[in-house]
Length: 207
Image (cartoon, rainbow, N blue to C red; front, side, top):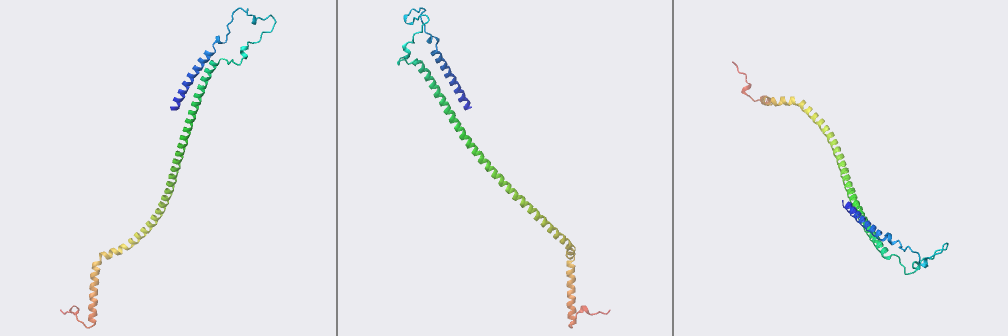
């Protein structure tokens, strides 16, 4: 938008100056400026030429050193052209400065985007590396879990093989303990009898 406004303003200025130049040229190039008005009479003896003779040389005015031409008119148009040249150079310098600034901003933006892209790529690479490590750890954990599951199944199978005997002991523990105690007492009494001891419980009672 800024460049469009600048271009539009420059166009308007150029049109205005072109109109000024055209007006100045019209003013300078008036037809009457180049028409020498002479009388219809050619009685002036210095311009009288006999038939078949060469014309006289041009007036000395054109060869004098003091003649400078239409200096006023040429100075005006030259000033206008110089002003146009200065404006064009100014516009060219402004355009060059704008182009330089735009190029600098473009380079800065390009560098920022490149740095951002490199940072993003680094993050992607780190994420991929971390993902690979996690997948490797998952594979190792899965393998270890399968091994431990096999060991657990083996222990469960062994436990189930021992369970019936353990249940029998638990159910009959009190009875077996009492029986073993009676058995131990009987053995101790038998040992004492063998050593000469007497116990009423071992005498045979007659009816």
